[in-house]
Length: 261
Ligand code: ADP
Image 1 (spheres, rainbow, N blue to C red):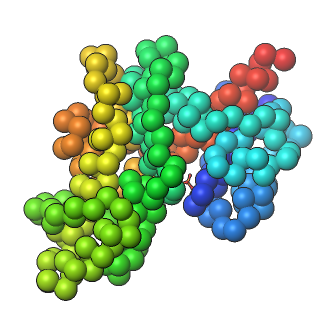
Image 2 (spheres, rainbow, N blue to C red):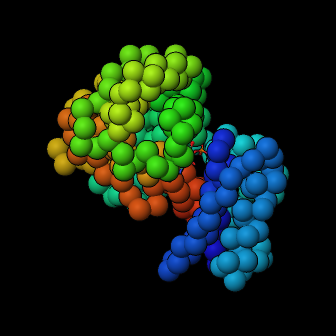
């Protein structure tokens, strides 16, 4: 039997199917309807896995749009799911840094996988994927192009953490002919500064050897990872399925529910 996890995010809906031997995953834009995105992503993933809903014993949902999915067996908070998924992807994790489309979170985990503490920012676009998307657009770039730019240059200074003011600063820097690469590096440093501020007390006193793991869609940006390493003074690991941590955690919790029956 399979179990399913669906993470209905503000930007992307991620679905994962697992059993003892296999893991299937799919990501789709959430668009305007979390309910439709959740259903469609799940249905399409079942098709890709050559399965149907009768082969799935439990479905757990998470993410900001989780309340919209009425076919799920259980809904679980993002903190619990992300922690569970990150631990599966990187077993030695002690600190999770997750940057999604409209929120960012830092989660401290003990060696047994329990959540000890967390900090979440879901009130302001600063330090989230939205910040990068808006500033990439001001530079005439797609967010996926930012990661490879500006890794070897001196960062331009971007003082404001507020997305609206930072966008004005970027426009001003372009008018002064500051190279795009330096502006991109400045943007990455700005998001890392904000995350390092959130990580603050949670990153202190980590067990020796505990990994700092970076998840969420923004973890695909290598420039942000490097900026985080510089700000935290710690190595930061990005797992291959970084954007699936929440959905994967949900699917693993669904498997535990199934075994408990
Ligand atoms: P949510 O769960 O809130 O929908 P995700 O964790 O899926 O968010 O992350 C979405 C964000 O990831 C986007 O806002 C964008 O900034 C970023 N992103 C998506 N694809 C890429 C990419 N290829 N390179 C860098 N960043 C990306």
